[in-house]
Image 1 (tube, one colour):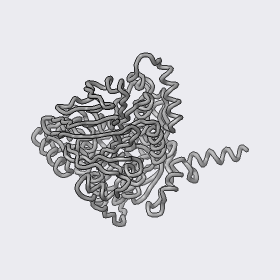
Image 2 (cartoon, rainbow, N blue to C red):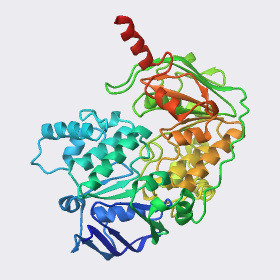
Image 3 (cartoon, one colour):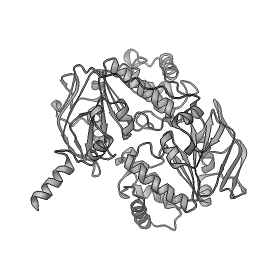
Length: 511
């Protein structure tokens, strides 16, 4: 008997038909991928299964019995758990309190806290239940969502881009967890744009395009190229990455030392590196090792640094505001799309005003038509699937919103672009487009700093690499001379003078 069967599920919004008579069949113990480009209707379909969205038509069978899931509580009662791509966590609460909210009141907070620690240890997911969510990086929030889902011992687990901000080591640990769950009879619906993952993990793959199912295949017998053709109708164009020709120094960080701003952050200690015009510097690291603190210091969100600790084109800017740094040519893409990169309730046109001034006239008057024209230009140039410039940011799929935000900053013609997690949750075609745009920006003479937990991405686009671990930054190494194994070791702090290396030397001396 099938665990889940969807029959002719349809859902239409004013500007788009998200699902058009979709059918899906999932057996017990099956890891079933749902593959499609951004805006194909995957997330809407998963939300319908979870009860977060009501379908307009169609039927759902659970264990062979027709069911109507009206809200997530009914889904959880059936044994359905979901990890959303856009996290559903309250920033002001701890990880344990967030998990507790979704459980019945037979659990005490102390029980939940203990169980989170046990589940996190059992599945190799590093989660501190007592940390407030606002202190967590995107990768750490992802782990909280996954542990929350595992805590309920689901019969069907829905994962929407679960590895988008996890390190390679964490991905392998998660895969081991999912295989273990499947062996115990749990069905898993797995959404990912990482084709290697789908081929390595999943038993079946349903492909969607434009809200419709276009085929079902066994991904283990497919290549990345064939899956890409099924998903977007073509293979992504190969990146043309010519030898860098670095120019003048754009960003110089010298001896940057900053105490954490909260008890759960990371102290920055003697951070030193530089980025030159016409090059891409990649920053690798496990989430929670100081990336957030470094980005805040570089963007100007944290202006506590001594002026000379951060220099922009030779000028000390360590204590300058984000606006003054932007006026000097620095543009920034944060890792959090909704809430930092874009205001969810505002339209795309209004969101251009967050970092662009073309539509702001004398005395602060906003030229509404010009803002709308800019938004239309970005939608067309970066192939953003949206209803138009008036569409709220929250109405876009994660990948399409990412294309809009990254495009907004690239299109501004920055002299220095700092971007965190540039292709988080983006399909293979759009990821290739964004990476190509970053390389083109570099070739035009811009300095680019990319922070990413996707090592494949960093090796693909970077000219030089550094690693951040425990608030310290490694020496830079040319990407062509580095290996994933070396960078993986450095991500644990194991470079000469690194935090783990220094600790090991101190222990040896003490012995």
